[in-house]
Length: 359
Image 1 (cartoon, rainbow, N blue to C red):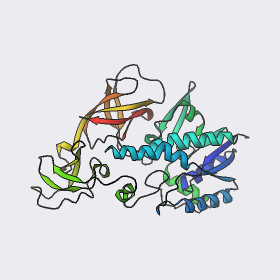
Image 2 (cartoon, helix red, strand yellow):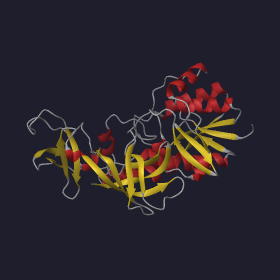
Image 3 (cartoon, one colour):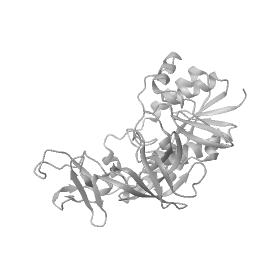
Image 4 (cartoon, one colour):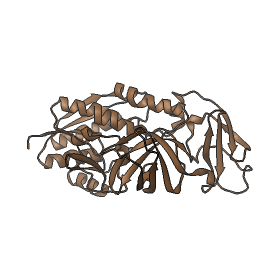
């Protein structure tokens, strides 16, 4: 098989096993390591990851290139990320990173090198039916990453392979160990795409967004503390509020219920089951469909408003080209403006949108 498949190699176990599987299947495999963050942050492990990637590629006898997409990442992903936080919203940069960096900048780079396909270590599947490409959930429901890929379209899916989408994480690590890959037990990466895990996320944001202190107020209107800036908090957040005892009638944690952006007030509620933390309807924009665009409202589909959430039954109403209204069967905890809602028909990822308002 002479087809050249270029793997996005991160140095992690998933992309490493991806490269191994493709080589075993007879593809002409090459790998590319992407460096996309030039910040001076100690949590970025790109040098260590590159060493792991090089070790794996040497072991598998696969050539490895390194490319820097930091400008693309900063302009297309990180600037949006910061702008959304400044608006008091909570963005999901990993989703935009997939569209703008991994499946645009990297894809174009790989095809300029002569690739016929690119491959990544995503836990998702691609199905071709009647010249249409569908994005499916990964077999391992605990690792399924289709939520992060809903912005892909027919062009990207037609040029991509997800070799580990039909196996589970345990099997991936077993394959890596059996193959002698040094990173078979390497911890999964977490945190913001390419930036790394930020132990103190608020401190990281403070480098880019100035403090705007204000008051913390209960849903009943009682002042119970001060905040550093609404951009540093997200809906449903429990940790880091600094609300001590004496403000409630019971021993229960406090959660972010809302943000009064006009008056710079953080609104909190006590107890995970407080009704102010739950909403049944939302409006979303920047709507994107992977396959055929629905011509009318959709009923009895499911959606996720955050990664790892179980599918939630819902209906889409007031559907337009760029926006929609969604009504859930059951009220949802901490619907968060700026986050993505992703729609499913069983295991098929239909597309999604950015949450704007909740009701």
